[in-house]
Length: 472
Image 1 (cartoon, rainbow, N blue to C red):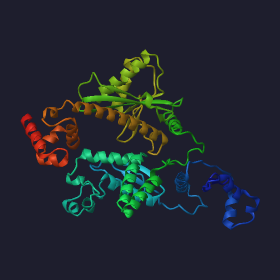
Image 2: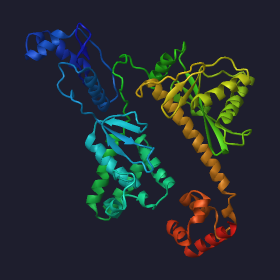
Image 3: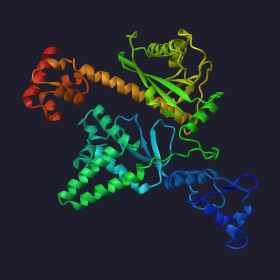
Image 4: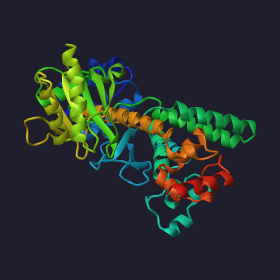
């Protein structure tokens, strides 16, 4: 970035070899030759700074962001309001899907990007929708006439969730698999693409094989190297290791004297108080420290009371730390607002813990609550501090949900289905995976059961229906 004597940014550029690029500007002959615009730019330069990025995609994104923020006089391209494409997933919809967007709005949706390769992104989106069977229509709840003429359903590119062909839980599983690709886990989908490509080539379907080849290339171009997002061009030019920017920004926003090198976060997961669990994740220097993760079965709380569960988990963990005289974290974080935070404070007081920096992150509006402060702290959604807190909160939530799901699967082994003749462990899992809950299975007839689960024939399906009807 070139600045004039008033400190105003007048030009933003990028290059693989900065030494050679800058040498072209600062040669003595350049001040006397060349076009008038170049001479004017060189004569106006008073100071310059640079930012090192990892690849050309990051350079494109950062250059575009800086030009749109500063509107330098000597930059012509990218001064309009057109921005690189994003992928948007609105998880509040009944059947979320992958949508394209230009602007990131404060609408609680999940955004991925921006991505500089627009054409590759569009083709990759179409492939992911088809590969995972996600809906591609604009309306999340189309009317009967629209469903009748849905081409995606006819060519079997959509699992048609709006018609009730699959449950909400089954659709969410497909969506989670697609989101894993967006998060950078591209190995499974690339392996599936390669298998289909080789099969198509073996069958002599060379056009189909070429399409799979192009799909793999597009996925590499879009997701192969995860791009950092430069949302705040006013950050200092000094670059920090991954995670360092977040903890420095967090210390500044919270007014902490020391950097929060070690942050732990608690989250609760239960269904109406049953199989209640708590998770604790640890981030060191802004990165997950999975060796220090812990999970808790809630033992003393039998009803649906998240505050009491949070109190139990925090008191058990810190009671053990103090008893064993182990070091305490720099920051304690809880997933939730004032109620969860107050419960954590009560837990620390109960075990006589020393003063500790604490906060609660309320998911609804991403508000940060601090003990002793009435009003929450609301940060810009692109702030590095908030991004770090969101990453920690999401990881704690994922860890808690995974533990809770594992306990539910173990309980399946002692379910009502154990006594049905002809239904073993494999079929029992298929039944509950297809219908979600036992009460949904009780509403199904034999035809629906055999249709949704290929491994169960009409005879076994009749036995299941008869048994469940007797147990009603």
